[in-house]
Image (tube, rainbow, N blue to C red; front, side):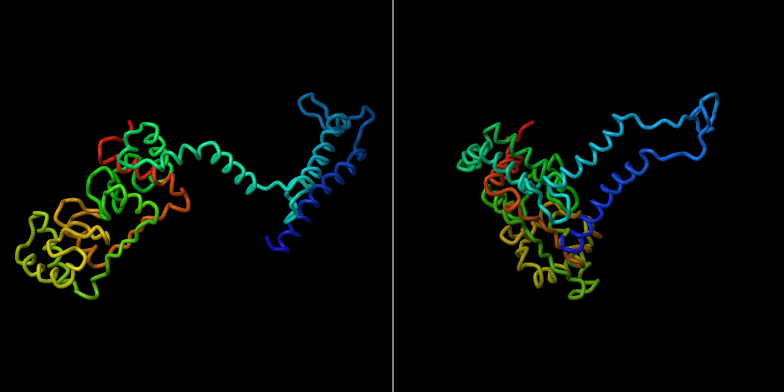
Length: 299
């Protein structure tokens, strides 16, 4: 917070506190101009009369107590702009203390799991329960609570992996993230060639297509696409190029969707989790994800 806003907060806070104190003092014995001899104000409704009686003393002192409490709080804790308070408390310090406490309590357990290979770790029910909680808290928003994914987000329960499904590759993917790099071919190929290559791509998985367009599209594919997807269309897990010969499509396998993917490209991004979770938790999370396609996930 810069100095201007710090001063603004200080002035506004103290003005309100001392303003309330002044108002309380000023009105403690304020006379009313319209008070009858029987000490009523003249307001009468349904037989109920309004008397001119002062506040109960305990109520008055309760107001005074709230003002004193507010002043004491602002002296002890941060509340007046950039003034930290004499106790030196801050939410950041409290957070760090809580994190340190949790690390001291659960650190040895995570360390033991981290030293265990993922194929062995998926046999440990406790490790899988923790891994499932990590998944639900951090990954379910994109991949779904059942890990079956959605349009643009991979299904993690099958054996189709863009970057490889070995324990090491899954862990690397979670640690460092992935950035898709399907280029935009629209300006390069034009609508006609894109329609041709889209028909050829769909033919690789046995789909019914326009055979004439597919035959023309094969040459387009061999000229422009084999560097990533390979001459047989089976892809390359080293760079995340998908296998085009199966029936699994990240963005959908209709002709119009494939044409759109080729025309506009795809730039999907998997975020890196190393800094947020740390290597030990990522190891557990990778084990849980690996278990989803190997029959050992918890109920």
